[in-house]
Image (cartoon, rainbow, N blue to C red; front, top):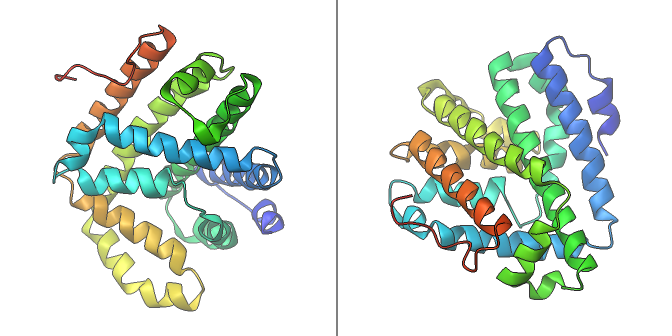
Length: 249
């Protein structure tokens, strides 16, 4: 809907240019996915993976110092729910974003968009592999998931995804430590509602609040990525219980 606004916006910096291209890529993918025969399968996969991540990292998820951050990561950044209006809002305000936001924040937003796009692309590819193997996503099991995972043609992108999670997590932690960001979000709520941007504002405020409450976001992200790298190796090596990890990891 807002593709022309994205492509027609003049950008002056490399960060703005990168964000623009990623938003264009994400915009096109969203419309491609909306017409894809396996779009409902990707929702089932996202639900299953979110539940699996909560189970694998249950100790961190229940930890009061990490719960809010993990909840935001699993329900907003990796969201099974439909975020079409939020994503449309980002496209709509892109011209203002590149005009008013400093380069470091545009760079961080580009990382978030790239992570979201990559995750959804990998979910769709997994749905395709499940279909090829004759295993419906609606009844996905650990065995079916691992079989499709090993058949993936995008294993390198999966490793890149984990690197990107670490990078974006560190950047988010850096920005939420700035008190000015909380003040800005507070005074911008009413203008955001008037501009029909309440979904986007709510998303940003939830992320800010979640990461501000965390004891050490950097440590959490490091542990998550280390664990998920071990899970990936377990799956590729055919371990019978790939999501069972050592207590000290």
